[in-house]
Length: 311
Image (tube, rainbow, N blue to C red; front, side, top):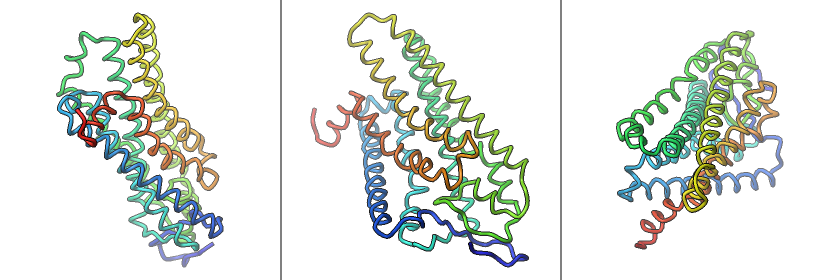
């Protein structure tokens, strides 16, 4: 454990990351992370390109939200994976400056928060489309959709700004080693020189409020969607509605299942939560474009038209 001078403030942190792995395991994990990163970028870029190039899709609210969601996933995984690859190449631990550490923490959690809001917005869109089809064009007009998109981005980047600022104001004089591969609030608070019960309470309260409120909203939306779908006659309409909803619910289950394990329970965070954090920071963004493209007929057709030149 590296110690700083007791009177000098910390100017950088050491991210231990995967220092417990041997060289062979580090190379294997590095190859996996690199592949996941490239595939995630390629998959989400393909979805964005297909939506932008299709004159019909980029006017539909569902695909406007999906395009923004794909862009968000690209940004989300980029905040962590390049840093992890550097860490894997540095067995002694990766050095990150004080400012860069909190900047990474802010962007990582802000984009995770924005993802919660976008998943809720997509659930709202499906609820309005299936439960109120006649009023849907007026309820989800282009102006309403744009307002919803902007609200998701703005609220996502404002939600965690206070806890991050509060943690950055804590005194850091002695320890500067974080047992994580990113600047997570839990190890940051653990190495500060003073207890921070109010800061921890604020972080935990905001995390719990965000996760459970959006998760319950999504569940309630899809419960009403399911009720409406069951009233439809058996056929293509019911199958299409089920296909769209199950794709979205698969993404919701992957994301919320892992995030709740890590942050709804504070004891699950820290070094014991590295693998859980790795799952929702890397694996979930990898699966999302596969789920949306493989289970969405319109996206598959748009990809064929734009990438393969098919009519």
